[in-house]
Length: 355
Image 1: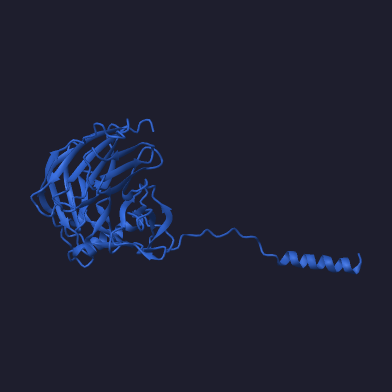
Image 2: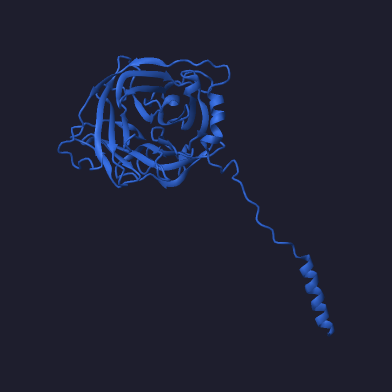
C-alpha cells in the first residue's frame, strides 16, 4: 500500500470513530404559552377560585315567569323551514321582576332546565317541564373576583355562555375576558375566576367594546372556542384559549351569511366522532327588522327567520339530542329591557337521522 492510501485510510477510520450516534429526536411537550386550555386541566382550580373553601352556598332569587305561547307565523315565509326542521314551540317570557330581561347566552342543563345570562351581569335559570317553560325561574347577579357585585355595563356585559359540571364560563364584552362561576357549589355566592383575557385588538386596531365575543362554546373534549360578533362591521374572527390564561384570534372567520354577524355557538355531543356545531347569526335594519339564520354542522340545511315570521333580537342558542334521536335547538332573544321588544324562547326539532 502506498503512503497516500495509508494516510487516507487512517483519516477515514478516525472520522468513523469520532462520528456521534444518531439519536431519536426528543418528544416535545406544548409549552404553557402554546398548550390549549382544557376543562379537565383547569376545572379543579376554577372551582376552588370561584367557590373558596368555607364559602356557603347561597340560593338564587326565585322568579315567577309567565310563558305565553306564540306562533312562528311562518305561513308564506320565503324561504320556508327546511323539511328536516319542525317548529316545536315558542313562548313570550315576562316577569313582574324588573330585573328579568336582556338575555343572551343559553345552555341546556342535565336536569332539563335552561340557563341564560343577562347583559347586565346576571344568571337566569328557566324552569322547564316536558319540553316547555313551567313558570318558574331563578336569578343571581354575578360577583367579581373580589366577591363584590359586578358594576355597570363595563364589567357586567355578559354575552356568551358555556356550561359543564356545575361550572358556568361566561364571555364579556367591553372588558373582553372569559370568567368561570361555580354555580353548583356556591350558587349566587360564586365569584368570578379568570379563565383568560380576550384579545382587545385585531389588525392593530382596538376591538369595539360592543363587538366582542358573543359566541362561546366548549367541545366534548373540553376545548373552548369563541367568536367575535363582527370586526369593524365585517367578518367575525374566531379565537382559541390557552392554558396560561391568554387567547388569540386564529386567523379563521365564522361562516357568516352576507350582512349577518355571529352571535351564538354550541357544540352538541353526538354518536359520530365529531360534535354537531350549531351557529346563530343575526342581522338588523329598520326596513327588514330582525333576521336570524341558524345552521348545524352535519347538514347543509338552515333555518332562516325573518318577516312575516315572529322574530326578535335572538342572541342565544343551545342544542341537545332528544330521546328519539332528534336534535332540539333552543333560541332566546334579548329584549334589551325595552317595552318594544320581547323575550322569546323558541324550540326547533331537527331530523338528523339521514345525515
